[in-house]
Each structure stands twice: as structure tokens, then as C-alpha cells.
Amino acid sequence: MRYCRHQAVNDVNPACTCPGRRQGPQALRESGINDCRLALVVIARDEAAGIIRCLESAAPFVDAMLLLDTGSTDDTVALARACGAEVHHFTWCDDFAAARNAALDLSRARWNLILDADEWIAGGGDHLAETVLGADRFVGRVPVTSEFDLQGGVESATSWMPRILPAGVRYSGRIHEQPRSDLRRVHVPLRVSHAGYRQTELARKRGRNRALLQRALAETPADAYLLYQLGKDYEIYREYPQAMHCFGQALDQASAADSFRHDLVLRMLYSLKQSRQFEQAFRFAEAEMPNWQHSPDFFFSLGDLLLDWAMENPATAVQELLPLAESCWTRCLEIGERPDLEGSVHGRGSHLAAHNLFVLYDGLGNRERAEQYRTLAMQLKADG
Image 1 (cartoon, rainbow, N blue to C red):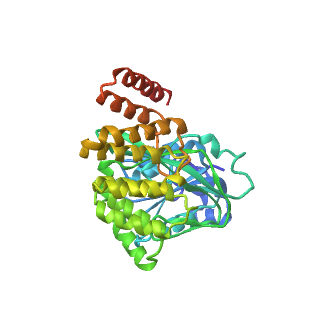
Image 2 (image 1 turned 135 degrees about the horizontal axis):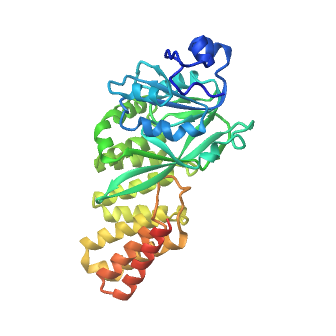
Image 3 (image 1 turned 180 degrees about the vertical axis):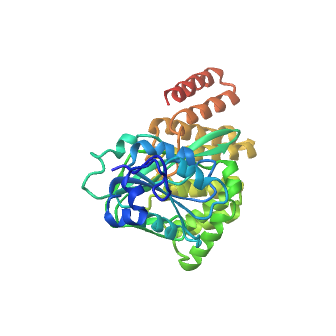
């Protein structure tokens, strides 16, 4: 059943006649009346800028919305209640899993959809239908597309995250927490967008994750996933030597089966390039190449590395480095888009690769080939 949308059930609303109004939230939970098929579960703190978008995007597809506030000083709580969310409060203890689990403890739904306050459902809501979330229990991994600022524009990268959980599944991990469950993982193409990597958001949250990651690594220093995440934090803020150190340690500990290894390799390659360590980056790419023949992102990143290297070594550029870059971007077009790969950037298997080939041929003075790839880039971008 759907709880009252007029106001959160833990507030008094004289106009409301739903069971939550008559019995109160504690009695409601104890009686089981609040049982429903699917609940949205969000933890938040000072997320007034995005909380309405988050909740309104999910409201048509869920039967209840629960928000656990961890200490907001802005209008997050009031805005969430105005959207129809049931709001509860939690004393922050530097542990995201503890907060997630406290929020899940409030849910009486058979399934829980987990979103962050700076995320929203961008499409595919039909994949939350009864026919999908039936009696068969699984952990649903959904594509979360993060926007980020790059060279005056906005690009996007996709990660597959476990965000649909059956009742009873809980989290572990102080930060970048993961569900504890042996249930099979199922890809559910519910499309979620994330704005947390835009420059304004990064500036607002700077330092928060790093401190928690360092504390978590003090407890489990060989955790490849935490090392990868700490390296990401350094890389995002352009601290490349520290990023490379963490990525190197993560590569030593990660297995070939780890889903984040694809993004880890790309970020190591990027950090080496940004540090102007071109030869080391190229040797690293050569060693990894057999593992990523299916990845347009790998060949795109390698092409970028070769182009930057060519700009610093004009003597070898035309004969050696630029032909290799050309072959990399051509390979991207042959592979096509692979949004199923962790950290994949939209366009690297299509219009971005074609654009780079246009720039390459234009710089070499080959106007005919340049125009061919300029036209192709525009067509691929229009096709989506």
C-alpha cells in the first residue's frame, strides 16, 4: 500500500485519514501495515540543492520514501517532507554502512531502492515493476552515470552499482560501503544519474571521503577496493603522485575478476599521463592491452597518451606516435560503446573517438579525411 503523500507519517496532519495518521509511526511499523513492495531509502545531510529532484524522480515508481537525515543544517528535512518522504534522524558516526543500515531498519518493504541525494532516476523506471521485482531474491546492480566537468564541457562515466536490495540485506564498510550478501547480482537497466563529481560538488565535499578512506585502510590496509577509491579521491583533486601510489597498490591486490579493475587501469594510465611519465605509461598499457581488447575506453585513453607524448616529442611524432594514436581511435570505433564496463565514458566508442580522428587529420593537413571524421562525429553524437 502507499502511505499518505500529504505529509510524512511521523508528522501530524489533521487532513490525513491513512493508518499512519491514526496509529502513529511506531504502531504502524509494529503492526506491519506499512509493509509494501518497494521503498526508496536515502541518507542525506545538507542536500537541499538536489533532494527534490531525487525524490520526485523516484516517487512514481515506489510505494514509500524514507529519508534518514544525518545532521542537516539547511532545508533538506523540510523539502523531503514536502515531497512526501518519511524523515528520521541519525547521529553521524563516520560510518556510511551504519547510516545505511539504520535507514534500512526503518523499511518494511520487500524491496529497497537505494539512491544518494545527489542522484536521480533518469529513465527505465519500468524495470522496477512487479514483474521484475518478484519473489526471486537478488541484488540489483544499476548503471549510475556520473557527470563531470572536462575542458569546458560536461562528460559522463558509468558505474554499475548495487542499488536494489531485497529485505534483510545490509551493508558493511565505513565508506564506499557494499551490501553483504551471497545473492546473485543481476544487471537492472534502471538509469540513474549522479551530479556529485561536478566541480561545485567536489569543492563542497572536499576532504570528507579521504579522511574516512584513510581510517578504513588503517583497519584493512590490503583492501584493493578502498585503495582504488582513495586513489580516485587523489586523482579527482589532481594529486597525481599520491593517486598513482594508491592505484599501484590496488593493482597489486586486485584480481582479474574485480569489476572495478577496468576503471582502475584507466585511472592509472591517466594519472601517469598527467604526470608526464609517458614511457612508463606506455609500458603499463602494453602489459594491460591483452586484457582490454574489448574496451573502447582503454584504446581511447592510450590514444590520448600517445597524442600528448607526440606533442612533447615532435621528432618521433609523425612516424611513430601519431600512427599509433590513429590506430587506437580507429579501434574504438570498431568496438563501439561498452556502457557495461565499469567507468566507461559515453562517446569513447563513438563520437569522441571520431572527433579525435578529425582533430588528428586536420592537424596533419589531410582535409578530406578530417571532414569525413568530422561528419561521422556529428552523426554519431546525434544518434546518441
